[in-house]
Image (cartoon, rainbow, N blue to C red; front, side, top):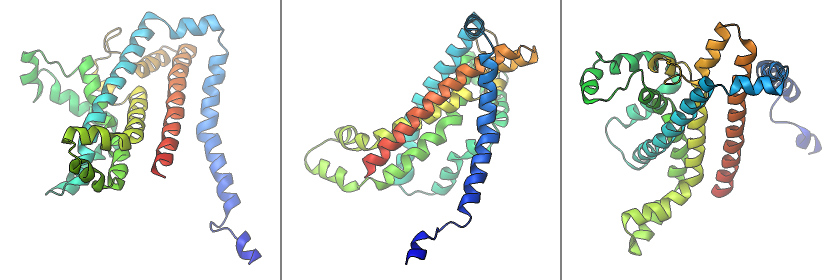
Length: 275
């Protein structure tokens, strides 16, 4: 019995842990340390001067603002899609469920090219929208639209397991007590979904902040107007301004780490709520 108790289910545990730690060190820790080391070589005044130029502030405003708006939209759309996929059976349900994961499999550059061709002034959709004053390509609206497409799966996949575990009898009990449909949604359903909604929101926001491939094709990359922070980093690198690029990357890195902390906290809250 003692030998069975000491026996590990996973063979090669030490080798697996060693490989995992090596992977984390080579592919994650070392690059992050290199970024922080390059940024730390700058004085405080130089760092602030690099990350707080008028062009950088405009890029931050667009990056964080568009990501925030897209995350809010994705929460509404994702909740609706997750509810339909979990609670209803209809023809083509599996196809729709597969399409939700399309942004995960599709290269983001392809998504940007498709959106730019569709909503350009002479595109299939743009030729009807532009005369109405709706410019969904090479504008801030285009950035939001693409980020909504990229981030939607995070919300849907975060909500689906919680909706599946939610007992429909709770809704039936609320209806028997005289609650309206809206009261049932806001007082019975939403409180159970709250941690999952926040998790999906945080994941979508984090993805939007770091998105580059799709946005660069639809934004137009106009300084002070439609230029995002990741594109500004690439622009600095092309001009051989490595320290300035590293400083801006450090700001985005700090924002991403803050969001990761929030996401981990929300995951723990959701696990505690489920138990």
